[in-house]
Image (cartoon, rainbow, N blue to C red; front, side):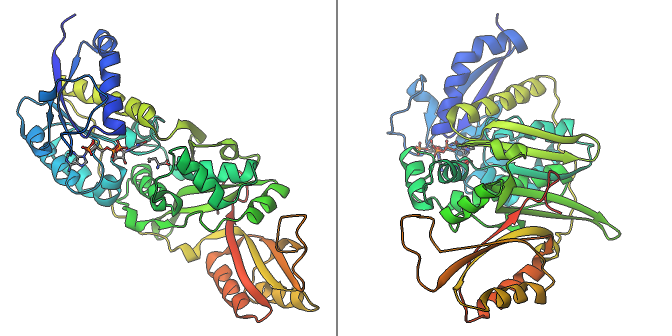
Length: 445
Ligand code: NAP
Ligand code: HSE
């Protein structure tokens, strides 16, 4: 079969770019048989022209000048898999301005300047497809963009970072502490040498900014997302969660609140106690999952591999075929328009909380601590006292106790004031972890 040839320019040939090039080589005949199109990887941009590449392409295909590929009139579609905002932003905008469809995996770019790039693509009537930018191989962006376009989605809860899910799984199942589990994730190649983007929640924050934009039709950027990571989670927190029917997960949360003042949204990343009956609780190791709640559709769950060359290349390939087919038909997938939607201040939100504190162990301590909760209207649902170690063979630290509380639903502002009062008490040695509790199947309130 000799279908029309679509010449593809790939910017980047690292983990993801090389996997895509190899997948196109393997699936080329099948794709042609299904679509009538022959995808040809015509040019590839890299930074280091001397590096060996695990792809079967002639050397003349490679260049160190990505802008030359974007400007090449023979190139039909651009795939951007170099990452970062500079120079990716200029390259993507130049491609769009030249009428070339763009497929990208670059969540950092879209979370930083998504509104500008979306508007440019919409104005130029050019495809901008980014399935791979959120949750790697899980087909989620297209369902959100297309199938759920008219759905009144009010909440998205996601496990969108595989590295932190792996670390938390090891802490839960092997009793590892955070440092051991991180070292293991680094040895296995999940976590980078500098794990900041993953463990401090910024990678998950970039993804939820993109998801919130699509789910609510709002201009949401990474800078709008409140990020709290997992560095502070202890083996004691995990053990308490397990004893009470919860697992600790790093959740990316996007919520839309409608009221008399209109729609307001929240996008944030934080660890949470997830009931072990919730579908997200069973998502283990480096897998990702996204739980969507819409007023009409009810609950939906998407599950799979959120990272890695193969899964990410799979998402890119689907987009590439779409972009190539649309181009043949002189068509493009509209992103629609996005509006400015006010953010709801986090301190107005309501949740149940787990709070651990280390105190002196003497008469009156519990009454003083309970008083701090009561002073701010935060109601205690349950409480445990134990020595501040989970090692049953270690002797208790004399005169000290760890108190662990779960509250009823409370406003974040009231909880913050409670924590302030607790830390001012001289019998409180340390306010430890404060973790939100997903209070029922329907999520945070
Ligand atoms: P990577 O392995 O670091 O590859 C980046 C590639 O881009 C390299 O080939 C690099 O060239 C090239 N490059 C970077 N800057 C360049 C420049 N200025 N000019 C020319 N070439 C340049 O990264 P990756 O893991 O493949 O990730 C690529 C993108 O996919 C990122 O946006 C990432 O967030 C996203 N993503 C990755 C995953 C994953 O699992 N890895 C999952 C989902 C999304 P050299 O090879 O010469 O250095
Ligand atoms: N570092 C990310 C993760 C993969 O652990 O999920 C790329 O988004």
